[in-house]
Length: 419
Image 1 (tube, helix red, strand yellow):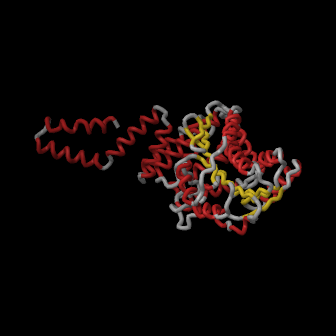
Image 2 (cartoon, helix red, strand yellow):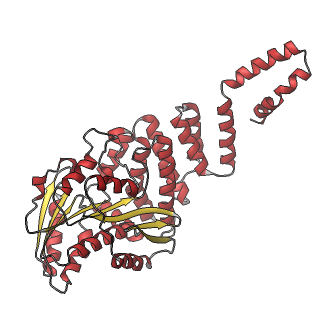
Image 3 (cartoon, helix red, strand yellow):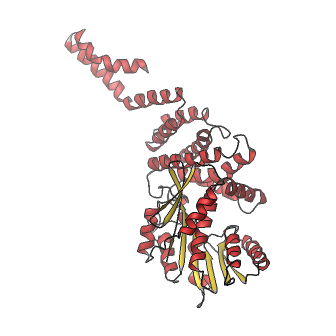
């Protein structure tokens, strides 16, 4: 490579040594040969220098650029080098790098969708997978931050209501509602009648409903559960059983980014759902999302944003658990790697992970007719108290009625409410 660089620098000296016409001929030939791959040579030199200094981020970015440019020779060479630099049990960037490399390989092989589906198929409601999710919730405050801030907004909006209906568009295991049921039970004026409509998949909804009913009975809270086993895109107003006389709260926690928007489908399920919910006249709607800008980004900017976002997340896990901790490896593989692979390897309708920044969500909610419902100072104080149990690298910021949770200098999750 030094010879190549030297050849370029010294071509201008050829004419001083040879007859002009001979020098011109040789110069033209050499320049023609180099012009076939001048940028590749520069890129290769830069990558080799990055490898020698162990700059994994730089090499990952270079590999992604080669993939973006459809430079298959360079991409495959980079992938070969990266395999010796990444490790699922190493430093945070090495661990993340292993999954980002998997995404790049899958993108070239056009196998991203099948890998994502394969990882999803392991997920459903196995005890093992649920234990990984629970462990991640305990290790990192991101989910607790989201659930607590959303619950705080709902509790505030419903403090004087006797009949409350909550629609959760992705209820999962229903863990978010445990604390809210307890909070309603402790209300000085007594607990309201609560109905929760949970949207999700399969028989798991029945289990979730029974678990919440049992908890409500324990705290003497009147409670009913309405299970809607449908894809979110297929949910109709009649499935939600909205009734007059009930104060309605709608919860969008870590789920709206899964819906395709106008960049994917003419149906634009993302905005259609918001308009449908606005038509229900809810008293409060809560939104919790990852603060990551990858929805409509072209591949290379999306890759770099993913690298930045998940580096912060993997580093935040690093301060909580030893690197060889088996459960740590499992939660990274089963709870985070799937999303990373999908973001990098998939396009169009096959890309499920489509995060947007809160500014874009605000535009969508405003266009659907919503107005901001500022989170109270009580909610902010509760979140700050929560963070005392975690590393001081976590921070919370309150801005324009919304809350932001970050690790070091990177905002990772935002939470707000609407009416």
